[in-house]
Length: 339
Image 1 (cartoon, rainbow, N blue to C red):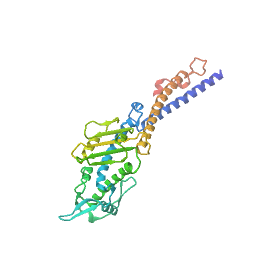
Image 2: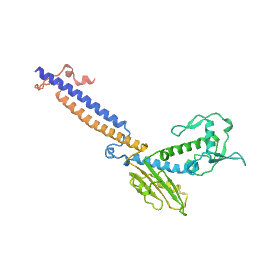
Image 3: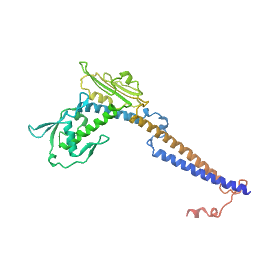
Image 4: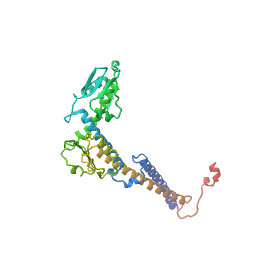
């Protein structure tokens, strides 16, 4: 008899412990889902097992396509014969009738340094301004390359102080360095080529893989090919970036349709870049979300199963005794307990 009672007490203790463990598992699963980067996607994320078919990938590729065309504009602005040219005149300053001065990129950068500004590790403008009251007067600014006006989309005013000019050009230079660093100087899983061909047959090519053919570029993982002579696109992307075709036509220096854009991403990720890191993070977050979902399901099923089992065992002190024994607190009317 005593042995049966011990078994009953042990059984209740084990079930109570299991119910707490299952409850903790369910709460941990909810936390893993709630604090996950994919919270809100629901069960559909279980079936979206490929990063390359996700909205995140397509949005990132669309952003990089815009960066590619931004680089095209900055290339014409800052480079001479394919090399960064610090002695290249960028703007013309006018401070009254007949008072004109052309500023080179080097002059603008040195002026920004004197004012206390510089480019940080991430090619962003940093520093604090130094007082130079004599330079607070506005001057008329004429950009010697029209691409800067387009890239700024109205942010660069025609009249500004020299400090404002230096800050804006320094910000553009930082973007140029960032894009050049990520797409041209270092190995990346993104390959691109933009070609514009004049009526005389002269091609202007912008690419980070000059030795690859068009077919080779289209043979990597995910790709997008936009020819200028047709409205159709050739791609295997789940979602096509909205402004890719518009950017190709906007930057067309020739009044013809002899141009194309091809951009591809090697989905084997042989190089460490933002795409390989994003892919690894995507799969890690997705797996954590699925594990959290499984924890919630298993946790609540186990919790309610052990709770029901404990309800059936409640009041029994012996597995051989069918009589339910009440403690003094159990004899108190429910109304009194509620009060």
